[in-house]
Amino acid sequence: MSKFSSWKKAGTAIVATLMTVGMLGACGSSSSSSGTKITIFNSKVEIESQMEDMAAKYSKEKGVDVEVYYSNDTVAAHLATKYASKDPYTISMVDAKDIYSLAEEHAVDLSDQDWVKDTDYAISIDGKTYGFPVSIEARGLIYNADAIKKVTGKEFKPENYKTLDEFKDLIDELKAGGMESPTGVMKEDWSLAAHFLPEVYEEQEDPDAFCHELKDGKVDLSSNAKWNSLMDFFDVMKDNNYAKSSAISAEREVTEQKLAEGEIAFMFGGNWDWSVLNQYDYTENMGLMPVPQNTNDGSNEKLVGGSKYFFIDSSDNTSDEQRQAAKDFLNWLAEDKAGQEFISTDAALISPFKNNEIEASDPLGKSVKSYADAGKLIGNYNYLPDDHFSVLGAAFQKWLAGEEDRAGLAQDIQDYWKTAKFTGATA
View 1 (tube, rainbow, N blue to C red):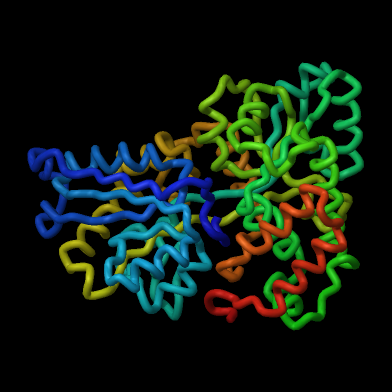
View 2 (view 1 turned 135 degrees about the vertical axis):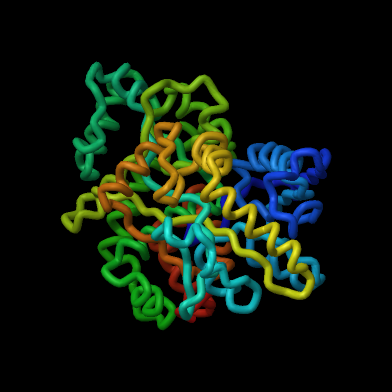
């Protein structure tokens, strides 16, 4: 969430500049930040338009010029360019691993802020709080219960399909009932290697030790139980993919539309996908469930989750007035009713703050909250190398396209790790 590089789609970088409309509504902001200009880097393309709308309203009401930017480069590479040009964002949205790798050099200590006491998700390093949690996010298998019921005639209960054997039986039942291809597979490198592949690490008994063993060349993935368990699941998804004959040409929007409208029943993803799914004529009953696996360690009863984070720039290129305006903005998100509504309702995110009592507004969010409340989230691994998803995403795409077998993909991953560089405190 997380965890990993941001979820992005191809295309040119999008820059949305939102200038203040006036100073008439400035009474709600602190005097030290009124009239100040701040920049926000948004690494979640799914909430791009919501961020733009929010920034325009916030600018008008608080008297603060707000510019929101998005880039389709990896977060680390994009921010490195900004630092090199001495033009950092006032506030940057990153993954947990980026806080660990960047915060001590680039971020403001936020330990004295009121919101810290209201969340269990803030990131602290050596006693200093640097990471403001934006949302709880989780990964798993998205299902369309209405589509399943339409074919089988039975209510779909995800708890009845914890094992891969049970899942395969359901796939067969759906196909026998007329759903020719019950699954959809996103071909994007971030989906394959920032969301799915990391579960192989995260479900190990000690993810950090496992990744270090990978780096030391001591892991044979082909004989690893978790690798085989998860890839057995992915084989089922791949073999029943509506775009099986052209898997690496499938467009995300098409896959999500087919899932939303019930043409297919399953797609691996996360609660962030709702911002795409809800653009279509979606059916009412959808949700997020754990990846079905023939396992007895409980991993098939949990989602994998974590948070996105904001940090505030500490460099001389950002003024004290801008930093105060940034702190005011973060407090608004966490403590103010309007900020809470933006997170929970407008952006359809799961708030990491205990004082935000607004219920999740979408079915995937409700699923994540139910698993989080029950303590059934496997933690994200937060130290993946910055190029993990781009390099191994390309390798995964070769496998998806049938250009190499599972053993070849396993070898590609092992070869990659030999020269990989961890981010953050574990390096």
